[in-house]
Length: 148
Length: 211
Image 1 (cartoon, chains in turn green, blue):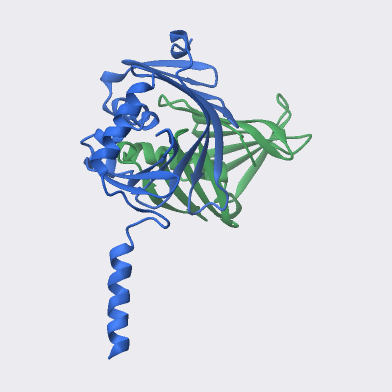
Image 2 (cartoon, rainbow over the protein chains, first blue to last red):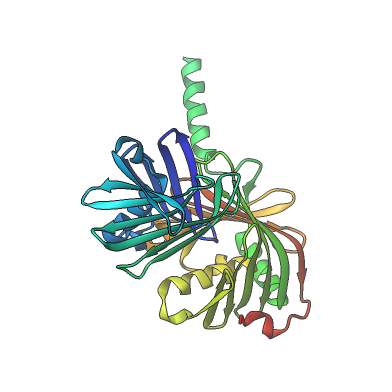
């Protein structure tokens, strides 16, 4: 289970627990900085932590406001595509042209997709399902909204 | 001078009693209690109960509430099922463990993984109130008019990392575990309240196999 709380604008606390209540991770994302408050010893692996940290950072878009971006349109799926530089990589944010909702994020290096985020079933401008699919490692995170 | 003595006395008295939960006093004859608990647990072959789980995280203003139903059958069969707000099922059948998440079933061999083994032991022993005989915990015994309160402190290093103490609330009339509170080193906790508990009703073995 994932629990998030916005402490202040641009300051998010993100906690992962198991269904049985055991806390796995406790992260804080403030502007562009990141704090690890807790991690269960079994999962305290730098590569795993870095991957999850990056995924959530891309999703929270805390760094978006400060970056310069380019906009494209894609006639094929009627989306506005915002390209934002993220270190040496690019994040592509796909906004539906009709309702301006974020439907997809692609994290890519040159032309190779590394991670795809799919956001579905919006209600009150909030997605009910988020799927994070990594293409270079075997990791898939599926988030379903329980309560707002 | 008198004031000083009072202060010193107050300090010591707080220090001495700080460990005892409010409203409870230590159980005098712990051996008799343990024997009684063990004898009662032997009489129970099946348990069926609803539960409400409350997760408290100090940084969140709201508690996370999940609800469900569980079945237990001797020896070592447990079906632990969350129904609201999410569907999630863990079933233990002797040395097999099943997890059903989002309609997808995974099956594990409990002996293949140390963590599964300790989850299994903790869940099965908690619902039966059997943890008090375990060598992995140091036990303290308290009581009030209605309940016994067992405070179990894990002794093994692995468990200590994520668990400070387990509190078991046991009904004095039937020696049933009515509430479990698992407190983490950070003082965040998970509390499980049991309700509609029925014992020794027939439960078919097929309930502990998940497809």
